[in-house]
Image 1 (cartoon, rainbow, N blue to C red):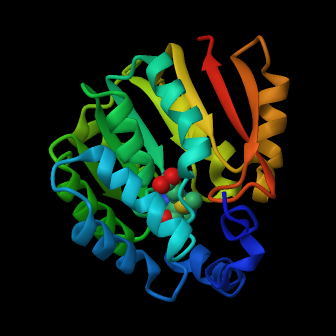
Image 2 (tube, rainbow, N blue to C red):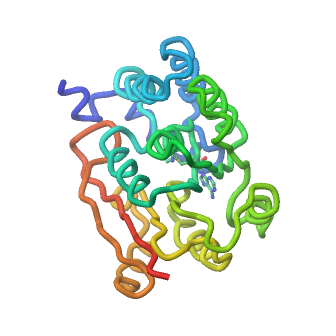
Length: 250
Ligand SMILES: C[S@@+](CC[C@H](N)C(=O)[O-])C[C@H]1O[C@@H](n2cnc3c(N)ncnc32)[C@H](O)[C@@H]1O
C-alpha cells in the first residue's frame, strides 16, 4: 500500500475535511462538490448493474481522488459480516451519505430490503443515482429526515415502509454522533428490534460517541451483547477506530 493511501495527512482532500467539518454537520456534504464527483465517477467507470464494481469504484475514488466519509473497505468488511450474522431481511442505516454503506448491506444480504435515513436531500439524490447504477434501487430506499424529528421519519418508516414490532434485523448507526444513543433509544421504544437483531455503530473512536459506548458497556449481557472491533478510520491505516457490534438480547 502506498504511503499516500496509508497516511491521510499526505492527501489534500483529507486536510480539506477539516475546513468542511462545519459544512458536514449543516449540509451533510464537505462543500467542495466531492459527493457529486463521486457519483459521476461511479456512473462513468463502474459496470452498470454490478454492485461489486460500484463498491470498488467508490473505494477507488476515495483513495485516489477525494477522501469520502463512507465506512470504507476495511470497516466495511466488519459491517458485511454483521449483516450476514443477522441474516438480514430488513435493514436500516442511519446516515446515507453517498449510499456506500447501503450498497454493502444490500450485497451482503441479497434478499433484504434496505432503508437509509439521511438528513440531506442532496445526499439522498447522490445515493439514489449510485443505487440505480448498481441495479439495487428496487430494494434500497433513502428516507430524507432524522429519527429525532419528532416522529415524522419514524412514522414514515412504520406507515409507508412496513416497520413493525420485531421486524428489524440489522441497524447500522453512522450519522450524527450525538444522536447515536437517542436514536437507538427511539428505535427501541418502537419495539422494532427482536432477539438476535444486530446493531453496528461506526466511528466509535474517531470522532467517538462516548454516551453510546458507555450505554453498551452498561447493557453488556443485559439488553445487548457487544463486541468492540479494533480497526482503522476509513481509507487509511494510521488512525485507529472502533466499530461496535451489539446483539440485542431482547
Ligand atoms: C459518516 S456519513 C454516513 C456514511 C454511510 N453510512 C456510509 O458508510 O456510506 C454521515 C451521514 O449522516 C448524515 N446525518 C447527519 N446527521 C444525521 C441525522 N441526525 N439523521 C440522519 N442523517 C444524518 C450526514 O448528512 C451524512 O450524510
